[in-house]
Image 1 (cartoon, rainbow, N blue to C red):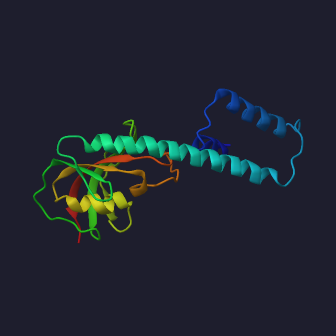
Image 2 (cartoon, rainbow, N blue to C red):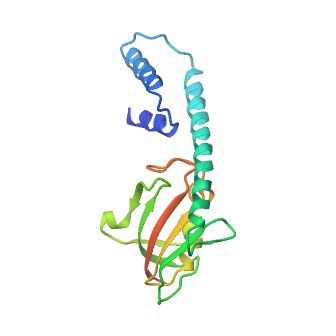
Image 3 (tube, rainbow, N blue to C red):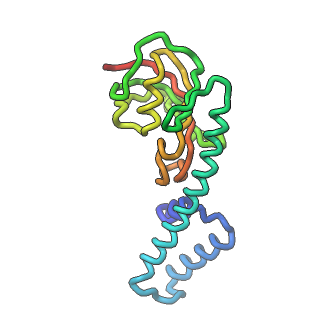
Length: 186
């Protein structure tokens, strides 16, 4: 049920009437009150959910690009050739990583509406990663920092997760990370 609910969420089906229809269909089918479907039904349902998910991701990407443009207009913001928006909050004085470095950071990631989707602060422990194994936005943005610095990095959808849905991150989302570079580990 939760897996199907996640698919409905990812497809952005929010209309109460459609949700009620889906619930009634599930109840009827589990009680054997509804008609049998042929072998084509699972692929029809999957195609329907995929279509709605893609349409929702494209709509979100359009809103995300407007958000990135808004973030680029903030004082001190720098937009890179790829479209990443970097804004230094605190200048670091230590070592500068490369896009292949292993780093230890504290961060908070938010959606364009400010909703937090992930935070090392909330987990109570810094995050460590090799910058070759993270989203493109981090591989590009974190090497712009020096150890001890803090920055706000805004990622256009294509530098984050693109059209793919992730837990707590709808497909097509522009993301903002407030990152503190604690250590370059190489």
